[in-house]
Image (cartoon, rainbow, N blue to C red; front, side, top):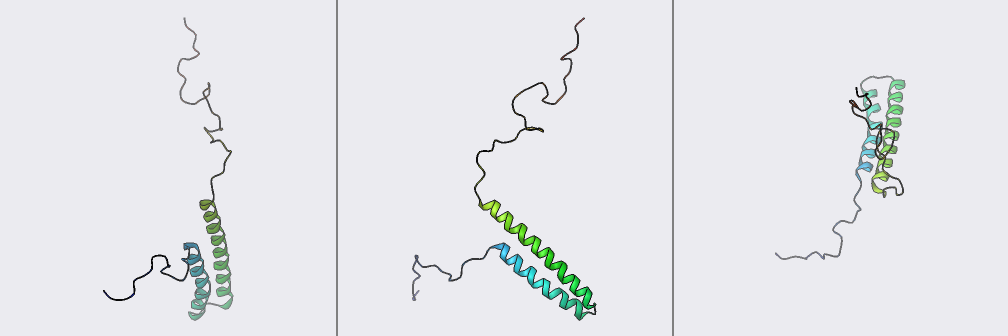
Length: 110
């Protein structure tokens, strides 16, 4: 077991770790280029390949926005000052209209 011993204070990797959303967007951008090239290779028209490329680019852009938005929502602190909503119409407490069956509550006694 000869050789240099790693210092526990120095990082093992020199590049920062990448998040999953960045990897997904990179693969999607790659497919936006690759798919039209393959379509042209197999004889699809230039207009068809261009339309496919534009469609894939639009879907990629929307997915990127949704991924970033969900990352911000997951990383952010919960909103304070909002009481939890209850019931169908956000009512709390007890009352006459709480749901369920009301059997014999208002029937006259003979």
